[in-house]
Length: 106
Image (cartoon, rainbow, N blue to C red; front, side, top):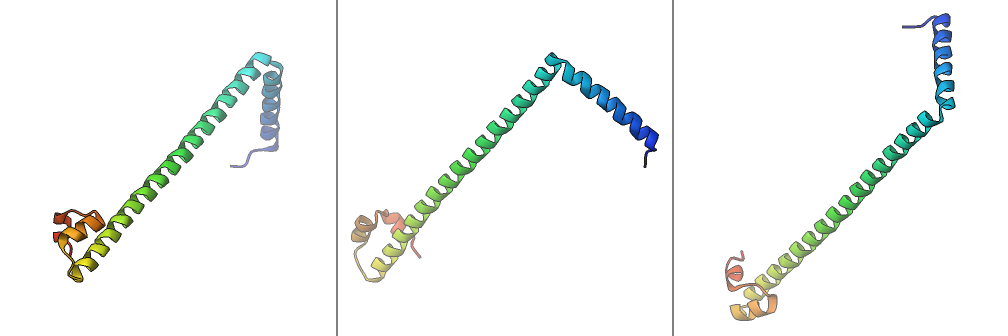
């Protein structure tokens, strides 16, 4: 799909003419620049929202993981206390687990 040199020259001349008309028309150029600015602002807002969403999701995931880890630690402590023969009530008051949770420990 190669173009002839004459065709390329014609297209370049048309482009040059259109560009000069565009640059000479202050209203058209200002409209274009305003639209470009708006699009850039929209992209920036979208990117900021994306980054904030990622940060919020990461923080929520960290909190959830921390809570799960703490709960598992309490279950491990409860199992050890149970294996040592301590009363279930003592295990419950020490770990914060319910009597039902302690009864379900493997």
